[in-house]
Structure formats: C-alpha cells, structure tokens
Length: 235
Image (cartoon, rainbow, N blue to C red; front, top):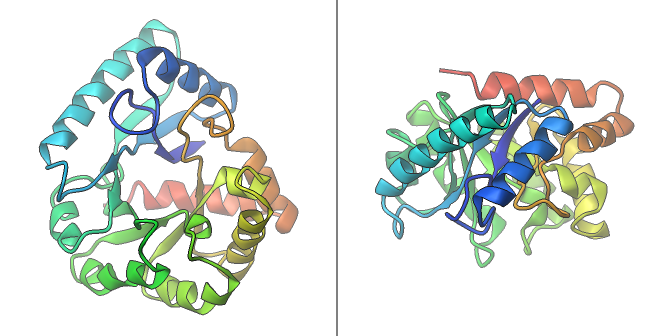
C-alpha cells in the first residue's frame, strides 16, 4: 500500500518529534502493509522558504538508511503538505510535488473558507499540475452543504484526499459522516492516506480504512488504492 500523506520525518513539524518515534511509526506502517510512503511535512512557502525542501530530502535519505538497518522495507519519497498561498502554483511547478509526479498536496488554514481551495485550480491546470486537496472532511467550515462546491473542485481536476482515520471515527461522528458523504458523492475523485502524525490515534495505518471504503461499496477500496498509485506515478 502507498501512503501519500504522512508526517514521518522527525522534528520538522507537528508530526514525529524524534527518530525513535519515526522508526516506531515506520514499524506500524510496515505491519499494516504499507510499503511505500511519501513524506509530506507541513510547509508554507511564504514562511519557511524552499531551502526547507533540501532539509526534508536529507532527512529522507537518513531515514532510508535507518530503515535498512532496522530491516524495514519501505520505499520513501519526498513530498509536502503545502499551505495554500497566492504563489503556490509557481512553487510546485518546480519542486515539492508528490514524489516524481505532477500531483501536489495542499491544505487550507483553519481560518480559510473551503471555497478558497478552488482559487488555484485554473492555474494548476494551465501548468499541467494535479491538485490534491488534503482532508476536505476535516476543515472547521466544511459541512454537507459544501457537496456542490467539492463537486466543482472535482470537475475541475482536483482530487479529494480523505484521511483514513476520518472513516474510522478518529475525528468524531460528524467528520466520519462527512467523509462517507464525500466518498459516496465523488468515488472517482477520492484518494485515501493516513495523515499520520504519531504512534497513537494518528498512526500510519490504512488497512482498516480501506475496509471501511469497501463497506460503503464493494471494490471501492481497491479502486481508491489503484487511483492513488497512478496519481503519484504520473509524469
């Protein structure tokens, strides 16, 4: 399984705080059947600067060596979870996409309305990029009334990345219901990732979440997994 949204790198954001936790998370991922992780630390191009991507790449290289020493077979790639900023398309046209693909993962500030996520879609299409909106079910402003808005995003080329834990009730009943509604409304545009931050409630596990997709509709889990793999391998 591929996990394309994972805060595995230590000490760079609110994810893993240490190498010890990072390796524990990696073991959890491997035990769950995850064998490919795209590391996606939070990054704001206006605040952090693109040099942060070099630091992330160096940590990925070190993690790869540590995984080999621990006999953990997980393929690692670099990505980022970008905060939406006015110049984001210019930035990700050059660096910071999901692996070697044309897809990029982005999120909104909790203070932004969900409608703001659509502001870059036209420019993304012009640049030949594929936008992936992180956890639309979890924004404070999001609700079922936003289904038409998310439908517009999907029609304009945006994928909707649901957090695995949302389908399992980790973030509460309302988030779970909204996640299920999004999946049922846009099954062809949904992808699933863990958004793992720790070894507890937000651990890097996906198997149960894919089973939850299949419970909504038989075969939906496999389709979503294949969609994500294709999305993150596109050139």
